Length: 65
Image (cartoon, rainbow, N blue to C red; front, side, top):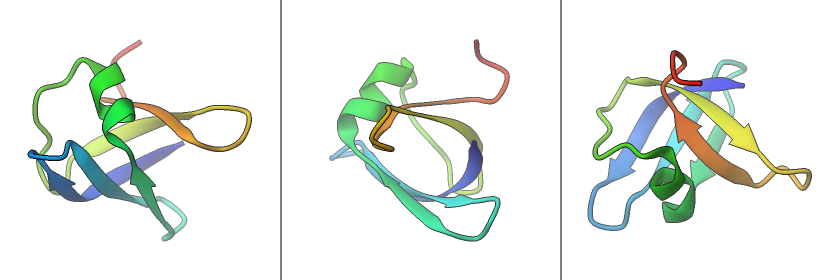
């Protein structure tokens, strides 16, 4: 699943993605921390990895493995 960064707070390392179907999906600091990224920009495309419960585990660039 992919989306676009709608909001990102560098202090809390949390944000909201606008998914391709138009829904919003919040991601927690632990998902950002698991990505290895240091900063996100508004409008940036991200791939979202979720667990079996649908909780966001990791956000990465679409080109990252």
